[in-house]
Image (cartoon, rainbow, N blue to C red; front, top):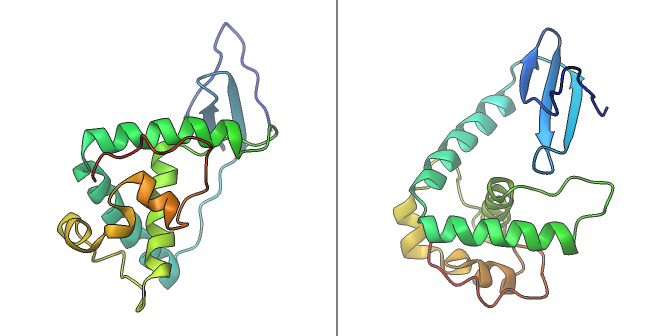
Length: 151
């Protein structure tokens, strides 16, 4: 649900009492939901390992590649995201691309054990964002040939 705060507070991100809040659209929209603590399963543990590993890889990715991800996120948000939905962030797009790349390989890549060195040596499909778009791992945008910085 959309949230409106008092006292000039426009948005808030985090958890307060039994609600979790998120700030979107450059601080123009705040969405709140009931705080839910999921029960721990084997799948949760596996997804946690993958998420931690991909976060580590993202920190090691070049700054120019991250800049390209931000540019792509803006273009994708304008061209491919419906007006009633929030556009994905650059980091969310990176995660989506990595999962799509993993599924496109045979055998499927183990994202919990992947390293930046593995990507640099065998990641031709995602070496640049233009490559990822050409290989069908990311949605096509009208202009993407300038997204050529190496990972």
